[in-house]
Length: 116
Image (tube, rainbow, N blue to C red; front, side, top):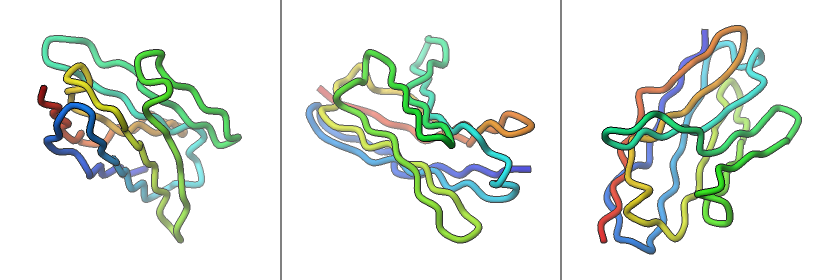
């Protein structure tokens, strides 16, 4: 099993920045893809950014040039980050960390609120 714990959400003014973190533990050797998703009120969950074990990166068009996904390994923990710059109220959502191994794993989510 893989456990995912997000942190770093909060309230920020438009134009500001936040950095989300996701700590992955457990059977991390089995993970081949890690991603950030988000879900705004009344909307479906959407993919924000993906980073594969081979280094391939994908960004949703709505965040290209503003968000940066990265990954770091520290012992038995993998950290996935999402640096978010130039935030707008449209970025307000619950952000979820996701990992794909033999199964699909989700974190509990962290709230990001951008005020205008």
